[in-house]
Image (tube, rainbow, N blue to C red; front, top):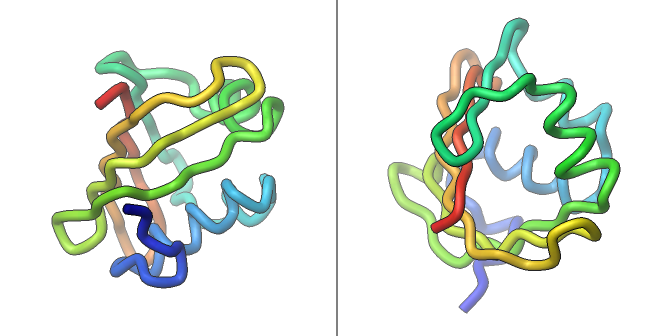
Amino acid sequence: MTIAVAKLSDPTVRALVTAVNANDRAAFLALLTEGATMSDDGSDRELQEWIDREIFGSRGHMEVQTESDGGRSLIANFRNETWGEMRTAWRFEIADGKVSRFETGQA
């Protein structure tokens, strides 16, 4: 079962997933705090480089399956033109309505 993006509980996470699925890099970046960080499969990555490679340069798309922690933790089928589709976990830290950190990896 998929959760419609419009039904995601946390408004910042909802906007971020919307930006990913619209391939809207500018909207995505506008939702990040200055100095935001991220990790992939437990290793910190350079955020700009990672989003360009894994999301915006390869048409990333998220289909959210479940949410928890008030909408700040997601299980989603993520697909892009590089890797195909995989089941992923996402966890977001929000500060003042923006994402200060996100962690993702295979679920």
